[in-house]
Length: 496
Image 1 (cartoon, helix red, strand yellow):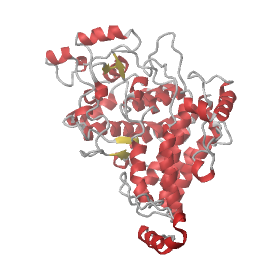
Image 2: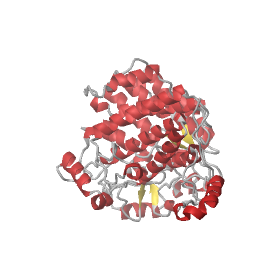
Image 3: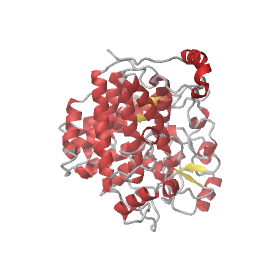
């Protein structure tokens, strides 16, 4: 039985105020329009919306060599970004409030989801920066702690994995319907699948740390893969489905960001062409010359991108000549377009395939990989309206038989990992934020086209606000990690 705390309604507070006003009127200060507490379900919907929309926008697409600008140089396009943002801590404050309300009325299911959301945000933040405030973060209101220390990245990852394990355990022993849930309709079992799938992702992120006895990466991974409840098909995907309603539409709907200066990057176009990948028809539009020539929609030669490392004026000349593809207009004219997937079956299967290749778990890597590819292509069959014929079962089977797609044709571990990373990359257009870039940093695959004088960017610099407001703590973190040099080319613990 859940314990419900005794609460005083606003009406009761008003009555008490009236009765006691003659005694201590100045001590009563209740705003009836601003309740000090609420049920966590009232907070969950907004928390979920923010979590699943974390990576909306085009910035990751420049980094992943999927789009480019012809009217200027985007910093992400040329790997010259500077300071990152701590905005995700603002979203974490809402998660904290939801968890506080859940604790107050003994609602462990909301605590479980809160732990998952915390793990997700802190995972993003530590990959973005390195050491971050974690153990002392978000305690300004509760403990008056406004200048939190920066935890070492290893400790942050340990905390993330612990919170994910705790979230799974809480939902296992409290499988109650979760009111206010817009992702799984309150199904605790579905959330457990997502949480455990994400645990595998975090552990695979640490693939270079298998020798660290404190982490036991391989053992943890195998235990979850063999005994945990996981996503069983793409029907289990953790995704936010958009509605054609005010404030519920696809983030890029009517976006002005796809203006005249944005085109497809030749890096991405050529990879789709080299793999005869039908996703090209759902992601990019034909060039003007291709359309004027009456090319069929599935004519791979009717698509072309711009070189991301030449002067943008040259790429603009190519655009003027009608030889560049733009992003498919479905992203801006379809108010529901496609769901935003936080973690899906396709990605999970690619992770499991990599684990088999690395010898972490037994199994058939080809079977896992093929299931991932099928799920990734089926996503477009379901959501790329009027394009489903290009993703039929027969076409997918033919795709999997292609020499550079078929995993069985890869004979070495490196070749197999390269092929798996390519498929993770190809599924990441407007999905997954910077995940494919972090995979690139982790494995070297796929390669990212850079000018000869451009060094690899591993992270973002800390926000200026931290220098201004939490000076001592951020300075200590920078000194500890980088000998005082807060630069984007500095590697953090997880990649070393």
